[in-house]
Length: 197
Image 1: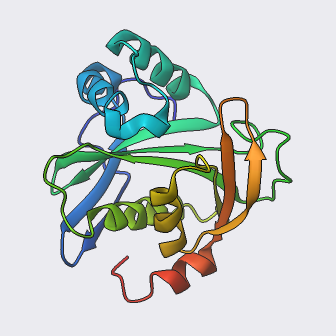
Image 2: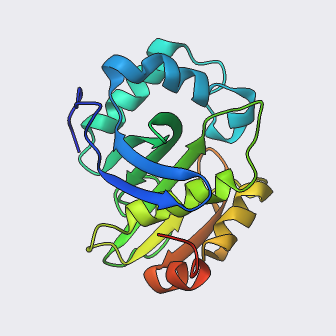
Image 3: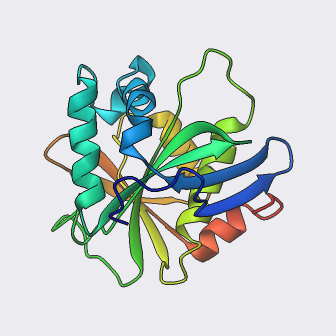
């Protein structure tokens, strides 16, 4: 989890989507991914990521903090070998949601961001969140995924619902009003039955 310059060929997880091909997740490598990462998180379509206006050095510094944190990590997702999305995992009892909800054993927090594109592919974002969830739940210790998107981010609320998340209600974080939502293994399995996982 704390490797700064992992080999870009390391595959942590992969699955094949019947329509869109092989989705894989590898560790973020700040030595080689900095420009790509900066372009994604500062893009106008990533407004809810709240990194607009940051320099590449500032983005790298933030992701170095994540890489060095014992309870937070970041990964790059690829589709057919091309970088296409960002994934973060964190322990919500120690990062992001400390004191804001009653954590349970086996909880894991998740953020994901699709790379900006001028040529959207139908079903792509849903395939990404399905792959991200399958990756996060690939750890047998994980029993429930926790998310806290901005209450205004209706597109993500719909995607979350499509893979089994159920809202628990709004919570106030220092940087936003968030919709706390949970998805158990069983809810994910039920929501994605029929999708190749």
